[in-house]
Amino acid sequence: MKNQLRDLQLLQVDTLLTSFGAVQSISRPRLGWVRAIRESLGMSAAAFARRLGMSHAGVRKLESSEATDTITLGTLRKLASALDCELHYALVPRTSLTQLLHERAEVVARERLAPIAHSMVLEDQAVNSSLNNLQFDRAVKDLIEGSRRELW
Image (cartoon, rainbow, N blue to C red; front, side, top):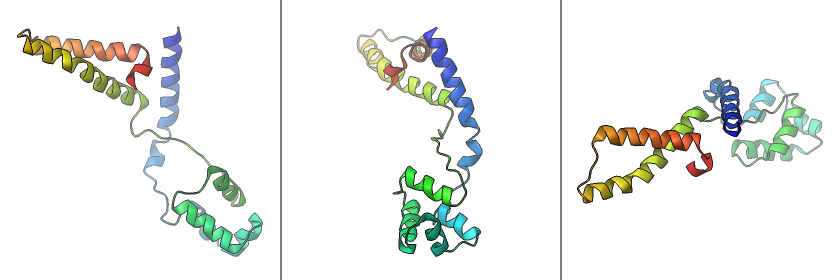
């Protein structure tokens, strides 16, 4: 039952994150989203500063910190609100979580089986490649179905 819930959670999060796939192809403007949106609206930095209750120099500093990835999420949320925007925050995997999990299981299985295969060769007890592949596939399956903490 516990594994079924874990697998369901993986499927649900994976499905949810696939909708962000199109967002991955959108790159942030060089000077940041805040400045790009503010300028697109025709809003001066001084007018934006008044909306935020801060100085013009403060706005420039915050826009610069967004462009250099040093801004905090809380501050970015306040700037977005002042532009009548919403901040959406997500970690978007480069591949699906299911694929990431499978690839990691393969790496761990190789690491675990390599010393055994090496010892078998040294003792002149090498197993043919089809049996090695079968053992590898079983190890990957066991890792995925077992405690996933062993993968990391």
